[in-house]
Length: 481
Ligand code: MSP
Image 1 (cartoon, rainbow, N blue to C red):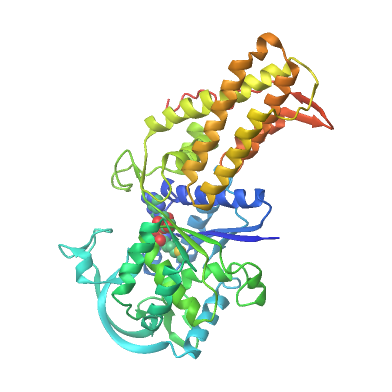
Image 2: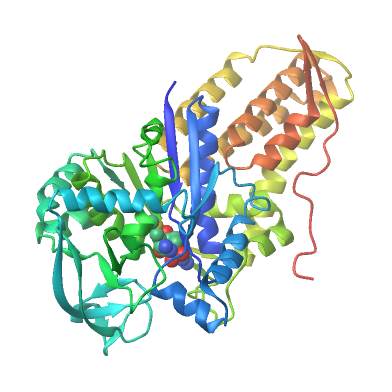
């Protein structure tokens, strides 16, 4: 049986989850559910990134010991599981000394054995927001463009990873799609970057300046760089360094945002090649979400908590909005007006209406006999399945949904053409129930709750078919009142 290992980035435990995190989680979840439905053995991992200067400072600001602070934030991320119906198999935390630390330290030793770790005196500009050294070119008016703060000048002795050694190999892996980066524009971006050559990267910080992290094996005076620590979660989460990690590694797909592509497309394969491990098969890069056209920020007070949005609109409305209205790989915007528009137009009047029409028609007929779909319906369904699979393989989730919605429209047309409410043609009605249950299957990875409600209304016993009238799947809510 095929296996699929699906991951999201791990979220910095420095603040509450927002709708941008939900975008990534819901995309990854749709894939995990899709792969399971296709019969693949699937492991879906997410979690929190809990070390480094950024977290240590956030904890200090909150007046809490760091461990207690990250415990509280990690709990908030873990609590997204239920409201968003996320089906992850493991929620992984980098402060887990048993499950995570040995893997990170083993990777360090592997790199050291290869002669890829060396000590060096270094002076550079460190952006805590990025948890990375930046250069003058990355700054505008002396400040980091993404974080709006001036980087710190750091002068210290630390360890470096000889990433420059692996530029050629990384370039080859990306160009040949051995490690496929999607969308294609992101692959080109990384190849252009690689053509200028890679520099070695700082891989540790003196413990006296940064104690919140994993110690360098054999040198307690240094802390492992937070990105080396964080990236390794993809390995340690499935058991590394114990051999069992090979059951899942290499990852089939890393879901990440465009801001962390370089870490995943350059440093991560560098580490893996140096450690003699296979590369992830796909990296899917999504864009950024804004809220009503603005960047989310605490100061603007426009940060949307995913669970609150679910409370207002329902889980599948939120999932559908994220998956359908944000073109895969591109930036998107959360607007309540557009959410309500989709909820009414495509969910309530589209899928919801079709499902309740079919269940109402079938409900009054009592027991029906299962019918094979007629040629026209069968063709629609076969094509839909094929096209959905093709779009999913290309990571075009929004288009996969568009295709399913066309099939729903065809279902409506079929009802109108055959007018079974007049004819009470049992064969037509039974076929519609079969079509509806197929559509419920098709939407299951994206809209798990709706899919389950539809399937619960349909009862199959041998070739006897009954359907119960369906409560509105997408009832009007007094949102925001
Ligand atoms: N901890 C690192 C990742 C380490 S992975 C080994 C990190 N954390 S983060 O919390 O800042 O971001 C986690 C993920 O959320 C990233 O993929 C990032 O792109 C995504 N998003 C954060 N804000 C976002 C939006 N506004 N919109 C969409 N995704 C966003 O980076």
